[in-house]
Image 1 (spheres, rainbow, N blue to C red):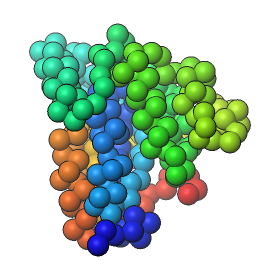
Image 2: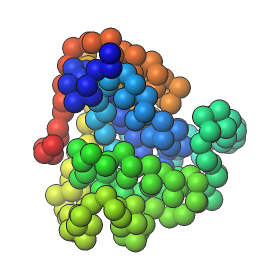
Image 3: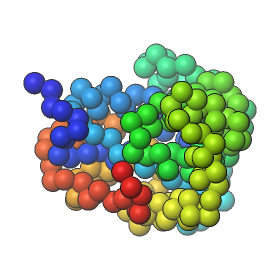
Image 4: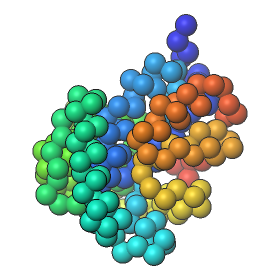
Length: 220
């Protein structure tokens, strides 16, 4: 019998960046897969840019290493065809996404967070359109949040900007170096890359110890 998601003992943390093509694959796939496993998702938006700079990189390795970048685009195209996902290579990469990332952080515990993230990802990787503007974020919130104007104001507040910096620093302290990364259990078991999504879910479904549930000062 399928476990009740709300009562799952080992949540899976999804650390993602809206500019990441492999995060696109995972965000578009994770909810039905987690539901089938009875796993609860904890959405952890963060910024890869500061992580890369801490590693000594001025940009994404897919930009700095042309061969790696060429492989990545071909690989993501193959994976999208495999999973039946729509896909269009963005004309801007990595695309700036501070505002939607702050919004995802603010709304990480809302029941509609998954749909919001999928909409932002579709804007970037299907429609090839900017995701940073208030207009784009408001469009992604349409029909989900009752007061998008209030949320947009909150996303621009200094407190939210600080929370995102703290969230990104927490990712760095955990040893996260790319996106998506899945973190399972109090032992901080890390799984990196969309191709490890199923492995991470299986680990969570195995009934390991509860996640540390780092809230970073955010209410649920």
